[in-house]
Image (tube, rainbow, N blue to C red; front, side, top):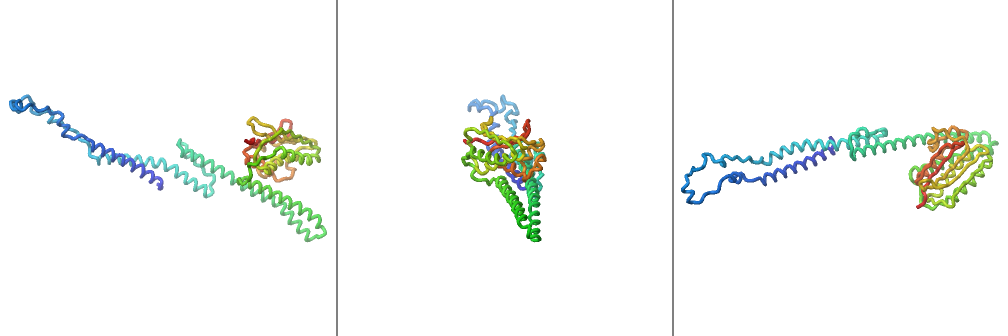
Length: 372
């Protein structure tokens, strides 16, 4: 038994012993005197002359009733105290065990998680309880599950980053070796070096943004954001990129959009979705950007394309870092754009979701709370 058990046991036991002692002493102190009880049955004495004239045993039985009245006395204090102490000893031990056992299980579970065993769960061990300790056990299970998923995501992210950096770094190494061996090819190799270093710089920048959002380090989240200006600027850039594919970009905006947050982060979140829509639209397709109020009085920014859509099993995965859909495998990129979008939207108290359109293509809806 641990120290907590003995603390519970000692406190409960002493409380009950003191209670039993106080009750016993009070009963013993306030008990009626035995002599007073016996005298209650004695008749009042007769006047002096009548008493002298009456024989000493006249009209009286040989054994007066009051002489044979036996008063049952109250037990002295030590006996009820000893009996109460024995009962309280058992009760205190059971009560202390009832409270200390789940806390001891929690301590063991915390120690296991601290040693890296993130699969530890204790909810099943507390299913028979219906109190705050059982709730604490279920909260521990949720915490351990969340930690396990975060650690797995971090390991997967580290693996993906290593994989993504390996190819451009290998090309950089090959280009520098060729430049040393064939100096006449320097202009061509320098262009390749610039292209690969640019890709690495872009990857590192997106990773830093993702890390800032995951760690909650995003700053200035309560600015007044001009979303009309942001969407208009993004639409102009999208039209410039879509012209090469003869794609149209349609924009439908209300008169005002009142949102508070971080201007730069919101710009990147929406730009990632719009550029992704332009990238996956076929030649001659259409990209739509529409903003409206939803049923919950939140601003819904819908970005649609006319591409091939996404497999139903991959709908949720497209918002995970480094995930690239099989339908878009021919397109370049690291698969971080939509992951950054989801982190930004969540940091602003919103949600983002994707669905396949019945007429073809993908629809991404960003829901953001309106400013108070």
